[in-house]
Amino acid sequence: MRQTRLVAGIFIAALAASFGLGNTTPAQSQQDRQQIPQSQKPLTVQTTLVNVFVTVRDKRHEIVSDLSQNDFKVFEDGQEQKISFFSKEVNLPITLGILIDTSGSMERVIGAEQDTASRFLREVMRKKDEAMVISFDFDVDLLADFTEDTNVLERAIRRTSVNSVGGGGVVTPGTIPSGSNAGGTDLYDAIYLACHDELATEAGRKAVIVMSDMEDTGSKLRLQDASEACQRADGVIHVLLISDPGATFGVGPSVARKMADDTGGRVINVHNEKTLEKAFDEISEELRSQYVMGYYPTNDKRDGTFRKIRVDIARPDVKVLARKGYYAPFK
Image 1 (spheres, rainbow, N blue to C red):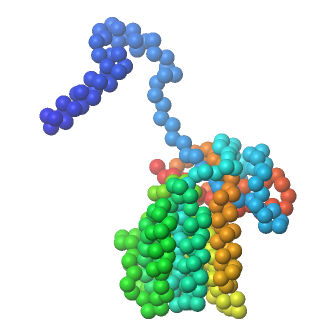
Image 2 (tube, helix red, strand yellow; image 1 turned 90 degrees about the horizontal axis):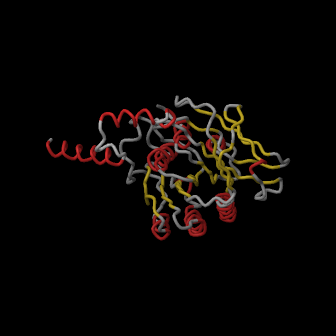
Image 3 (cartoon, helix red, strand yellow; image 1 turned 45 degrees about the vertical axis):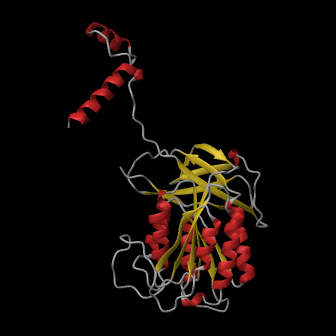
């Protein structure tokens, strides 16, 4: 207790000295206080900058890279917002989550997934970028936590193997509620864990790339839980939809579109190794060809509600890829 008080006393004395108050008389102190303008009293202002990353393609599916701030308008819940920050030279680090479906339905493509995912990371990652690798089937297995080392990431990718029986995975503890819906492909759980436990504390651009047929048969969480976790983490979900081109059943395509639409990502259909490589190339191009803009929302309530975002561009025949909204801070 004595040491604590001593340290506090030293701190207060130093603080007083720094403001020139250590040796003032009561009269001097009163005079000084009268000379301090009212406007110099400390103010506490809480502001939240909302960042929006935007990719623009033309009708030929080519990246549009010659837009300026004046070409963009951003709306939140229908109200236009003032763009306070804009750049088309995005040098912010990228944080990636690579999620690989290792359930039985992926057996024919697991080798191609490993090859192309490894090449993608080597080509897209630059200094200060980080990535992690997660596999999921009956379990959710964090094979490599965030690292800049592409060798570590590639070894993790090569360790993935198809599991059609289950067991042996490592689930991040304490984040998935217990339930009876277990014994299948844990897609929603994997995305939730990647976003809620891993991406939420990261800064900059954040993207989750999911290689799967998007058929969930075992998660304890719901589709909405997974999408919301990504939205709250300010992440984007890109889906490489690996499916049998002759299949006419299943909810995978609709699940993929829902997750991508909610977060501002894309769905790319993959039918073979060639289209898988092309899909990774497109994602790589988009990650390195984004506009970034920021605004301070006119709605400054800290109520935790979901706010819808719309980005308009003053140019015809272009397609805008951006997140559809965010969750406001909660006081």
